[in-house]
Image 1: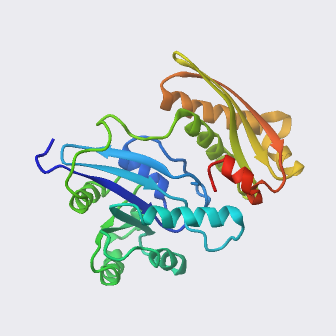
Image 2 (image 1 turned 180 degrees about the horizontal axis):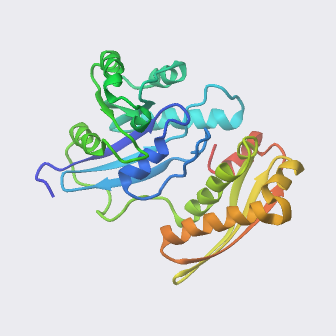
Length: 295
């Protein structure tokens, strides 16, 4: 460990669907946050931890700041973003390379003054001619003169060395908060619910995930075996039919893919049962949101 070791917390923020969770997973080197192409995938504050000889960064993956949708759920998500920003040592603002729009600016307006900032230009793999990005890079450096501007592709893992270097310079000197082998503070129970919910986002239609939640009814650990019983909550009977699918095929695919992620992450065999239950208006139910850890 370096004589001048650095350690601190880092908030990862940005508008929905800019790749924050993919970036976190890449920085940590393991899947600790669910991902999909749909906004509002991340609902819970998630810690991912990177430790090397020079520094330890404790990443906080926040919900995408919501500017399009109202309601109690999205108000809770936005409060989470603001609370995280106020309580970290540094901030990573993620935008898409070549694009800085109204929603990005709304998130940037939340950034606390004087806090170390790294501007990550993500999805670099989508830029065919890298030289064409230079004017945008200069524009962002002018807009954020105090920030380190780092182009990356979270999907491909490029640009991470420069991002780690920028992080090491942002964090205060001090001992690590976690052991060098720890990568998250998420419990297996919480991760199990998140893996199931990720498959809802990936395998169901556009409407379903926003009216769906996952509860873990029972979680039993027996050596290298996990017995997990979960319920998917949906708003309507028609949603239940979509999640179950013809002959139960969709629910089977959700369960199988989630179980495979669990077995890989937990390094254990997993017995998983998933049921679907209709609970209309859960996203506006304050008690329900509190039970799910969202309020």
